[in-house]
Amino acid sequence: MSTAMNFGTKSFQPRPPDKGSFPLDHFGECKSFKEKFMKCLRDNNFENALCRNQSKEYLECRMNRQLMAQESLKKLGFGDLIDGKSEARNES
Amino acid sequence: MGGLWRPGCRGVVFCGWRWSHPGSPARAAERVEAFLRPGWNGTGDAEWGLRRLGTWKRTGPRARDRAVQPPWRPKSTNPFTRAQEEDWRRRNKTVLTYVVAAAVGMLGASYAAVPLYRLYCQTTGLGGSAVAGHASDQIENMVPVKDRIIKVTFNADVHASLQWNFRPQQTEIYVVPGETALAFYKAKNPTDKPVIGISTYNVVPFEAGQYFNKIQCFCFEEQRLNPQEEVDMPVFFYIDPEFAEDPKMVNVDLITLSYTFFEAKEGYKLPVPGYN
Image (cartoon, rainbow over all chains, first blue to last red; front, side, top):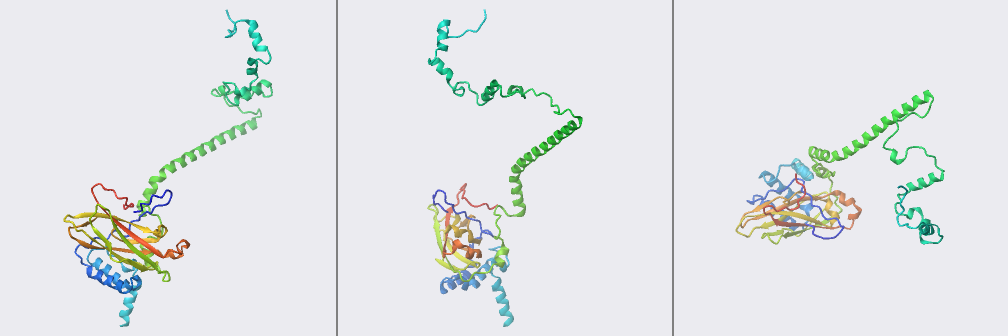
């Protein structure tokens, strides 16, 4: 929270997240996906662009286990990854 | 017995001397301007003074006569213009009524606007954040700005009364605007009792905070940790692609996301943004 007591400056107004809050993963059901994602990040010098597949898989895991509301991956910004996947499938 | 009793004036001779002797103080008081005398009631007396000079005809009712109005009579004697005058008077009255009604209507509308706007927000689901561009269709269509790399660092804080171990699982992550990113925090409850925490966040620098959009996170809702439990808390966010077009953000390459956990006690009101 912004506790800067500056007279006259605007204080930060936190906004609620668009889709609400993640339910807690009490049983660690998606922990392996998280570990894969973290490993990818560490290997790639923490660049997010290279690890988007792993983050997509983590979110898919959450959705499958009722830990996240079902949402099409396009709406989560993974539209290009889905197309890439289907293209690879068509080619192979 | 009649006549005016003049106070303080016993001897006629003496009074006369007081009133008429030039240079005496009483005479000086007489020479003081009218507006400096006590009992001056504003410029109305100017009117009175002018009237006394005879330059102002006594037309129209005086102030005290205004309560009793003489009945309105048309000014002209010609019957045609008299009818016209009456007609004008009637039209003026109508127009005046309309204007007053409009003014009252405006006043009422300004009072009614508050509940009406609230109703509008409820029906359209905007919920107070009537800002375009926070919808999920924006995420679908946004194009990452690949040449603008931003480093996002993570910070985790805990209020003194909350005994959790709360820390980020990565110190930084490199993202570009328009690309969704995932980050993790870890929280552990080392005590033997279940503890409920609630968190809020802060983004530094302040101006970049408006571009930092969280799709889903773990903030603003009570999170319960059982004794000795450790959980991963993800944050799914993106930076608005308009960040790259804002001239004020040209030099911003580092954004810090800071989460603070508080203990959620009964009746504890965290200043969370409107969630209804």
